[in-house]
Length: 82
Image (cartoon, rainbow, N blue to C red; front, side, top):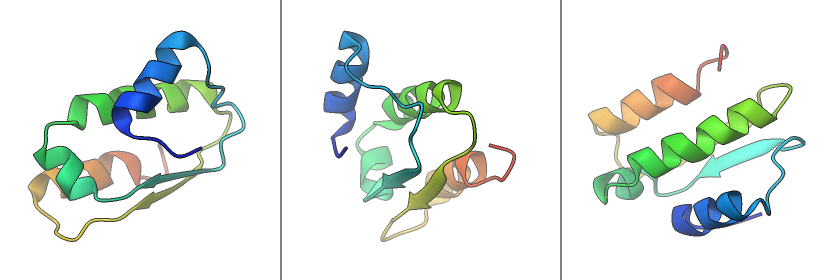
């Protein structure tokens, strides 16, 4: 599945997504998403994924820059303790 934060949230609210067998999470352009104010949306999506999966999926984070908010995101979700 590929989607923007808004589209993923829309499908989550409608009950159209089942994250239980998710194997990989990819955030592309993470710096731009944070810069544009999508942190709360990303946290909400990742929180739902965390609640649905039995084991931590592979998490890939792509960002052209690494400002402090990206380091914070990486520390929160690229942690083996999930």
